[in-house]
Length: 345
Picture 1 (cartoon, rainbow, N blue to C red):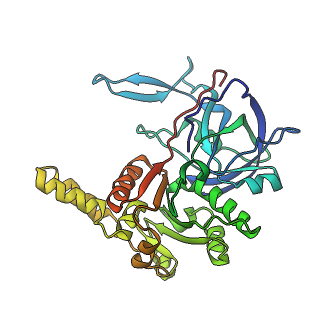
Picture 2: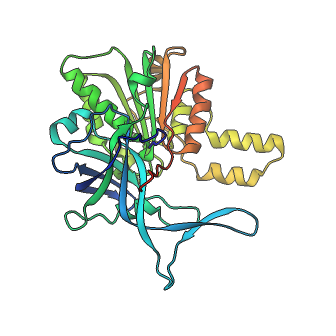
Picture 3: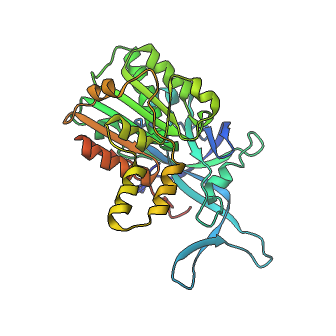
């Protein structure tokens, strides 16, 4: 997800509608937005983002506790009812430009966010109430922006490994679908692509079948590494499914210990909270690569000095992925995001 550009003076809100909503779990979903009638979406490159808005969001207000810490609590009216209002946010587009050209829609892969106070995110709570066609209205800013694209980030890299944690897969799904489309037309760039996507369960691995199809088709030099951090018993029978969080699978690939193992070692050396570090390690799923690949074979694709690591998703995981990338001699690039609130939002 990203939203770090100015929306610009020519941008304006349009009224879109959600044409389909697919729940992958109670907190993860895919949905498609059709543009305002007679106004196609602007052209874009895979990896870019757009601002979405809902007008019936449960609003919050910012407060400080006696220790000066900031919290967000429901914004209640005089009758004790939470106020509703518009909220906007930028979301990475998970559809490929070729899909938008053919079908007209943009697709998104979103999570129901929860604050530290355990309140659902203002916009995502409203998004998860969408029920087409009864409640299908979504506003969008008529401008697509962002520089997290292969043209902007790839440079001279001969190998690109994309690491998506959770919904951080979104820009990479768009990139790979577009690359496969172009390869089918004979346009290949000679770059080796590897995708590592991890989520909690198999059901939450968005685009799992589509990405497997792209890998099997062989039009790209592409390897797909899917992993689950809460594997079910049936997952053990799936030889194309790995185990563990994305950062730890990447560590395994490059021959490094788990992050939790490093944290425990550091706690012991520095006099930190050893018990806490031990508990974190005990909870962690030890990483395993899918059976159809080997660490040696993957490392041969990711030669130091010619490899780019692109990542999007959980900030803590991305920070560790940077550490792993630097240790492996790979260039590191990440997608940043922040809330976008246009003047009239």
